Length: 349
Image 1 (cartoon, rainbow, N blue to C red):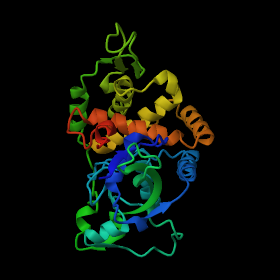
Image 2: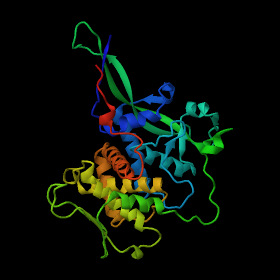
Image 3: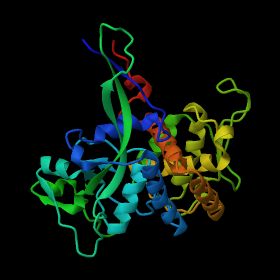
Image 4: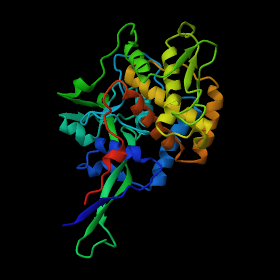
């Protein structure tokens, strides 16, 4: 009997995304995945994010209230897309004016009884679907088995691209259940889910002053002797619902030490980008509009662009960590969709 061993290659996209994104990928649809050089894939995706930021667009923000709350998810598996992929989906949805949060590959829509609409003439070839990145497992025999009497197989993770289509791009008997209900008239956001999450985290929040910030622990957490609290102005000081995106952003920072993020090693700009993306992922899930501009918006954009221009892995690292923060905070109010990849990757004898 062959012994199988899973070998996790340390790609910069991050172990936290390997199995989670693989759950959204249909392994029988290998034709929907495109093999490319991993660095080339990261550079292509980074270029898309840079192009949006240079236009002063933050692809993780959704500043409108909607009855279509929730994260971008796969229509067949019902699992949320993770890491950098929600950013790519939001950019694609904005470009084509899609409203639904449901996506699937061409073949997955067929399994759901739907068919993808023909590409409109005004859309350039290759741009009708949204191209995402996913790691998939490839198994091969080990070159040097540990035991001469037994073959040993190793599973490696390979980065591929694949294409998904929005529910607004399909037709069929089952299409309507995935398409967004058009919002008519005023929509008043329901802040109850956000209130519940804020309360259940147990985070220490101080109200007052005219600044919003998180004070890191003084001393080694959790045995620190000061700090580890959020400070925000009184709720009545905020306008247009901006209180909740602000609190979610600071909760992103509050989560840093709890999910193993080293803010000194990671850098200030990276930490702000992680908290920014995580808060927007949370806001989408909780149905909270998140369009208020950041303080020092231009300065942050400049530092993020510099980071992305200099490192094609920059946005992958940030979005991976943002997904981890989002999962951590949502775990206070619901069962996490998936456990840590450390628990998922087992070695079988």
